[in-house]
Length: 148
Image 1 (tube, rainbow, N blue to C red):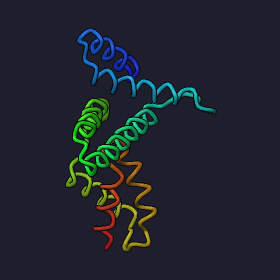
Image 2 (cartoon, rainbow, N blue to C red):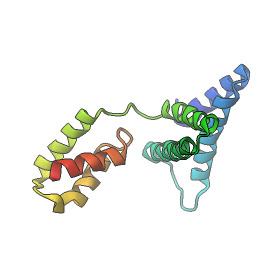
Image 3 (tube, rainbow, N blue to C red):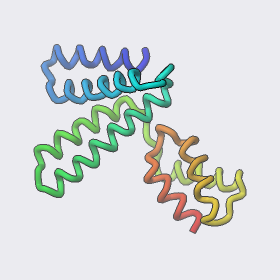
Image 4 (cartoon, helix red, strand yellow):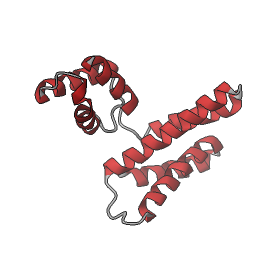
């Protein structure tokens, strides 16, 4: 069952359960995927592209939640974080910092990168290797720490 089919099934379940919050989050996912399909030159949508879209949705929700938190709007903060939880169910399990560090150390050794000058190359390789499994912000922090 592909992602779109899973989401459609979950939308049906949420409708039957009258779960408005989950339904809103699921519809946001479906909407983002439909927009992806209708973009110019969309062609075939790969699973990787779908994952990137879901990660983008999670990132947007987290940023909005932080903004609401800083404005003491706990009701809106909780709503955004609930959507983050729902969307995250469709993403692969995120790797721990230790696992990410191990992968990056392996890439450093493999590519023989010795200083901060190789950060751009390393970030490109790490982003590809860890696509969908780790947030680029965390990857960047670990890369900086290892190359410093």
